[in-house]
Image (tube, rainbow, N blue to C red; front, side, top):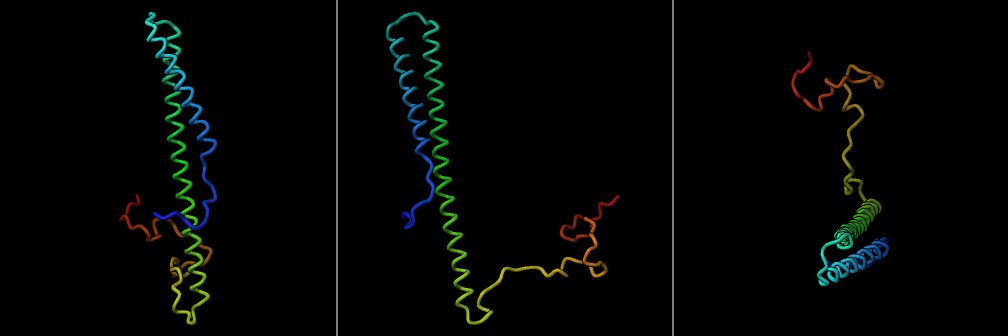
Length: 143
């Protein structure tokens, strides 16, 4: 896919990348600390538990933050593309309406007349009961 001509207005990532990198640095520090404690060969103590807990926690936090950053980035790209498509569609519709010599060349959106969903024996302000609407015919379920 080619890169767009216009700049993307919003791309999250600088702050998120900072926190992912920070979690990665802390995770690396905890893993090195745990490795040093394991190489020294001392019996497992509370320090080992703290190093292992810190290593696991910061690694998981880094992974979660990295996934969140990737999802935000993809959502921002999709949102920018959707906005571009909407602008293109509206511009094309505007240009087609402005350039049409005849009214038949532009196809309007289908609309129902106001009389189409009213019964003939009701006034404009009368309400229609749900089972008489006819939009969904589920059979006669009245009790």
